[in-house]
Image (cartoon, rainbow, N blue to C red; front, side, top):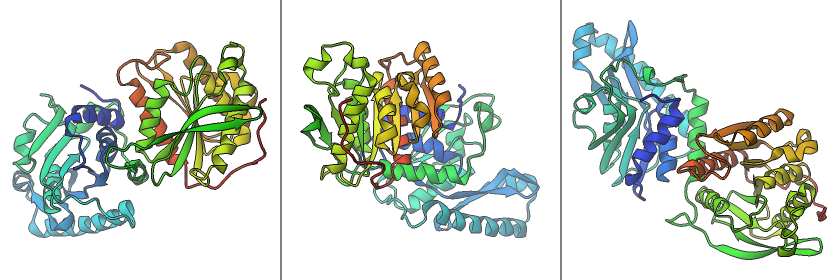
Length: 443
């Protein structure tokens, strides 16, 4: 088994660990390479993420070879076999440990800042790295978690030697490993991309995870209430959900032939609620208008309705002052990009969208835009690539492997939800109202 990168490894590992999901689970990533893997695991388990700060004690003339490792709270593990084989003196070991302790303290401040570590007392700690080689670092991480009061420790890694359990020496209560190959030589040989993880990526993972924590009670659910959105001469039905402590609100623009009751959009919305984001799912057309097929492709009309919803959200007491984003599907994605020029959302996400239908407006969009397309939807993928070339704003194109246009394949809509959630949480700061606030017309 090979992994494209740490993110893919984390998603696979998260799927394997699904049975651990529960309110008492905390995921601990080993900086730096283990944190992106751990972030995907934490998202899959809907669990808080923290770092488990550990430093390898490398042999002086061969730093990649670990003669031991140290962790927070004074924890240290030494590899007696490596020490004997390399002949490292006690004074050399002490000098290296002193240096690594300083690095450990600096990284604790850099990664956590003013945020306290996640409490572990009485909880299950899932310790995650991008792989295990000698096992020294993993053992220290497990001991650190134990010292912080964890009741159960699960070491979870994508790849490790076949004797990984022996190398851990009983420091983990359970070990979950996706692959234990006979030809194991180094962790990196099982990744197509094993680029070194930078500190900025570690802090970004932790920031996203903090934003992702459920904020609407133990289930992460929030109550939806029926609302009416005025749009010129018509009134549009909708459902507004705002979790307690919401950091933003996302207006959904559904695609042709769909409505605010779209099961796919509602599934994505539930994932956003768990990340502390509110949502407005509303009908872009009245029942009478929806019967005219020309209306569902009238992008200026649909964009006008989304702008009306934008102004309504900015005036609604439950959402006034919250950062605003747009999520569009199919033709709704074109409406979202068209409306973004005047509505000035903080971010836009398109799922299986037709951004090409907003062609004249694309160069004017300033909101950071994420385009998500099914990997098995070649026509729409080409249209999105062409549309992206006309965007001048921050943008990214992501494909969901194996997904067709409606994302009906197992796991594909979950991938859309993860991508949308991360894009919005990265780009929606506690809001200020942007752009003009004049009433929108139907046109």
